Image 1 (cartoon, helix red, strand yellow):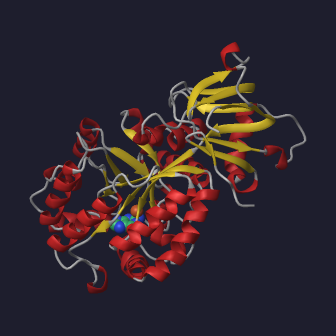
Image 2 (cartoon, helix red, strand yellow):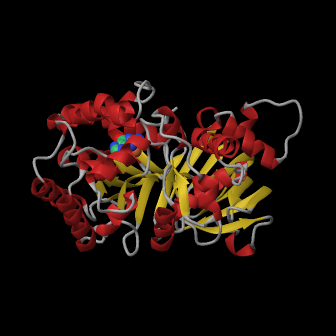
Image 3 (cartoon, protein in one colour):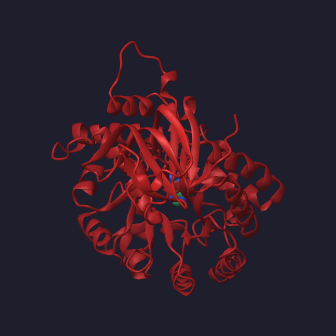
Length: 427
Ligand code: GUN
Ligand code: FE
């Protein structure tokens, strides 16, 4: 059923400055696309079936611009190191296990069930180096019902022998095979070109990936300016490039006609920021990860004020949880620390700005996604927030903020819709 009406208390972002709140309103879905939110139901939609969710809170689905599927198995573990040591001690050994398809199947079943049941409706996902395990992950995610970009990871240098591709040529060959096998095969799951980050990719590999991205018209995802020792390593490896992002730019993997999302941007220089703005590069802000692997505090207010494209990422397992409600809270907290500790020129984010980042901000990477305005793809979540009891009547803005801060995605989510299709949530 892709044409129907939900009636309830509805909240969604129009822009980073403006959030709409309508109590007892009608949200109309026609063929998987929103026709808008109405205080009284227009006659032309009166024939559609109506699901009465009076008293429930309805918001757009949430967008995770950066998550590592193979790291889901060790989320909440190994929080005792900073980025580069953490990659070597935990991420690479765990990811190496996905060479074993039986292990990949067990682990990705757990991951995709989590994606199905959480508040995320869209995600940009890193897989591992392995082509077959990546195909398996895509099959699992398709089954979950969410919409995702999934990337086979590429690494041909500065990585352990047990988790590295033999050469740029080998890496490109298996990437091409993976694209051929998966492109156009799924309704909701698409390939995305995924050089892990500059330290793990030679120029030859980046050049080849850029060509593949052009040939198949695929978007790009990677990491950028995340951690001081990583930024320093890039400076040593690529001394001729004036800043980290310039390496991706050199190989045409940095926005422009290639839709690109870069995770972190904690240490982006003014030049790097200018280039991201000019090229329309998306930033995936991952505050939990930035704390857990001691990366730092990203200047999100600066990016918002400069009108860069920006959304949120859970970055599991740098981030401990797939919950984007947690990420919204952490984004606000991160911005408060930036203001207090780093630079008082940049005031903290308001809750509604972080809510915008998790919905419409990141959503635009997927097209018209993350809002209920007319023409937006219909991704929606329904919550019974009466389960979080309160002695007084709360306003709708208060209910939304409280729902997010108190982990209502785990406690109160009742229904989830993606492109107008209701997901059959497990209890
Ligand atoms: N940089 C390169 N790989 C990774 C990763 O797996 N996680 C994080 N947080 N940063 C990275
Ligand atoms: Fe990451």
